[in-house]
Image (tube, rainbow, N blue to C red; front, side, top):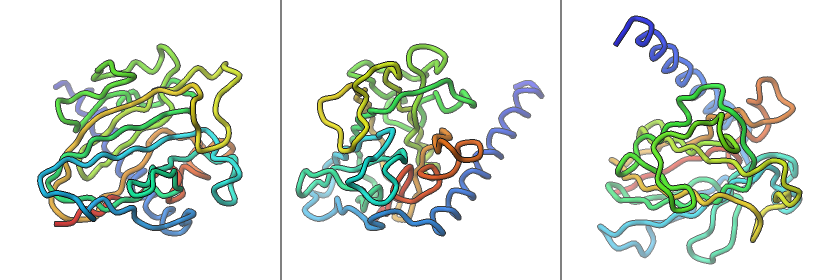
Length: 229
């Protein structure tokens, strides 16, 4: 690798570390709505995969807390099938996790094209509406809205945006049969421990560099994976 390439990689890793530290501090200082952990271990058969379904929305609406205009993720409760404002989960260790994320938010070109790469998934790919990809060019199509990234597991998947010019974009979560992209991918949990996950695309509109609001608040654009034996 050239000197320029090594320098770019080092700068990228440094920025990731800074964002990770800042996000963790802000998440601690500004907890979200529920602050709990959805449990996928109860009733789980050892060795069987776990299915997790989430959705990401451009504005969460009035039904989930005091910030109706904030961007957010939601999670489908595996016990009730209802959408809940909880982005943290308890998962079994050394287990395959099948993720489905319904992205109802629009996208834009990435400031850092690294976040357009699929990393750490089984097979090194993710699917958008059933079509596999490894790298998404955020300057094409509708861009990237968010990422689902677990730095401690080296997992990162871009959430491809919907057309921002549509008149029927979901503005009140939970979203139903409205325009969205279905993102699917799988990864494997590691040893027991606590792993934070977050969106690395600055999407807190109205805040400095897009890093405030839901972007920096627990239960909105990030959460934790508590991996247990």
